[in-house]
Image 1 (tube, rainbow, N blue to C red):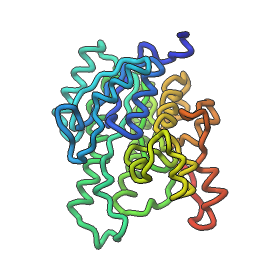
Image 2 (image 1 turned 90 degrees about the vertical axis):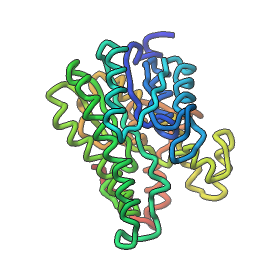
Image 3 (image 1 turned 135 degrees about the vertical axis):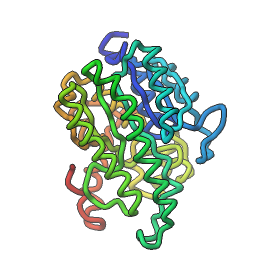
Length: 303
């Protein structure tokens, strides 16, 4: 393999929330680019999280290694500062203080999201729990991990969100969480830029996570059959697409020029030329503009 095949060889990444979905796709593609990737989350071979799903951090770490990188699983509750501090201390000790990429992809909020009711009819404790899980975890992780990047005066922070727009996302607490994550990238960028560290928010399009595949009753091998239930699913993208977007950003020596921006896979593939796992280049914004704008209005102005 050439250096061009492994542009992240020697780099160290932390994917917080790398158990499944977009986080798993990001971890694996960072590994494919040659990185050492710490994969964290609560779902482990030692026990499942409250989501009670079968995917584990150990499985993701094994996929990272199989892709050509080095995957290291570390069970972490990112809502617990002591847990995160222990993780960061481990990375610092094992990697001589090096951390090149931090991906904040902790979510797990699907069962907490109420799509049917306005704020005043929602359960308050559930909504606040969603915010703690989807926003506070990102703050805690950045607070404790960023000193490693600042000390080296280089690095990239990626805040994974849903949508790079000010458009309302359909549910109060869900919208607040995803919008807040974009603001986390903006705020971190402002404070990190003088130290040579970039921070961006990044959204996929219609993501084919494990849960979404189950919802449509398909597998990744048969996913196109899901379009029979929803034609928009034909324009979905695998987690690998999101992962390749992150890997491209991490390998870009001028990524600081993008700091503070809310980016999307559908814009980055044009710039970096990456494809999805099947060789296609999904563009959900283009699909929206052609087929959904009359029904739902514009996707929204990028932030």
